[in-house]
Amino acid sequence: MANPETTPTGAIITRRRFLAAGTVAGFGAFLAACGTGGTGASQAPSSGATEAPATQPPGATSAPSAGVGATPSAEVNWANWTYYMDYDEQTKKYPSLDAFTAEYGTKVNYSEVIDDNNSFFGTIKPALEANQDTGWDIVTLTDWMAARLIRLGWTEELDFANMPDFVANLQPNYKGLAWDPDMKHHAPWQSGMTGLGYDKDVTGELASLDALFTADPKWNGKVDYLSEMRDAVGLTMLKLGLDPTVPTREGGDAAAAEMQKAVDSGIVRAFKGNAYAEDLKSGDAVLAMAWSGDMVQALIDKPTLQFTIADQGGMIWTDNMMIPKGAQHKGTAELLMNYYYRPEVAALVTAYVNYLTPVKGTDAILLKNDPEIAKNPLIFPPADVRARLYAFGALSEEDETYFNEAFAKVSGV
Image (cartoon, rainbow, N blue to C red):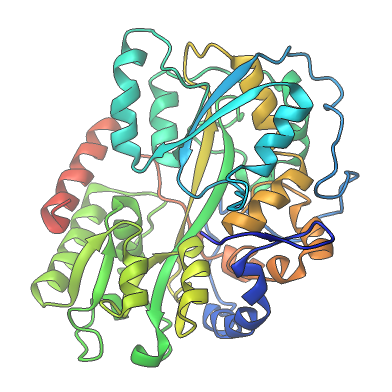
């Protein structure tokens, strides 16, 4: 991640922000490639302009929200993914977490221990099955795994009395999901887009998912597919004209067959997680299924790279905060989750992690304090792009196994 430097005015400057003015100009091609003729997507989170909230500016210490009734505990334990929180390389601390501790007196034991949904689930499953505390008060898992925990009854119901900022500031497009329609068990943390990442100096401008499946001497053997099943299968379904918001076994089989053809044809180099970004930067890959947040950073390191939501659309996913069943510090966990729904706090995180925020008012704060980030379409995508983002639909336990097995045969992961 970027190394922050503090200016005399106290503003945080990252490598991303320093170079943002140069990279935003390069996003014009991204916008042009997105077009305006998309079909409406299912429940794509919105990050459009919102009214400016009545909050203090970034860095200010604000009083606890009115109406919050929980008594803060001495500590709270949070499991999250790597590079997913504002971080000061000089002090080796997380500024927003330190501010929470200063306000509430609670030590946040923040651990970057999640690198895969399934593997982390395996670490907490035995305790949950035994009705025991997992040791975590907050876990941050992707939509489909969040839905699984909720379906199994392994999450606590949120007390909205402790979460007034969450209730007030959650973007409306995040509401009404089939697996938690009343938002009683999860609070979105960050979202990301999945689309095309490529070196435009090698491939030329690309606007279609067909490129990922087409033999071409410019990229044969230099194409990375994602090892995340829902992203790889979802993009392939879109390429085939299928709807990933309503996944069927027939659609999954068709997607697996399409990917297998590309593998057999020598188009695909590998199926990878975040490491695809390093392949793009090194030139080992020149085209990939890519995540928007990774590409913000990769664009800085290699300006010839580009991220595009293709003509057929792209995928959107969300990582969500949840409280595991039996957590010892439930009330404090709710206070902490609520704290990150203050727009001024969410703005600190967004400016660092560069993913899509679910918090209303964040864009208004950044437009005033960090306009380069606020105007970055990979962080605040325009409406026509959001309209062509698709969330992979929920799967039953049986269908989940079916899709995973089919994908494993193709990907080897």
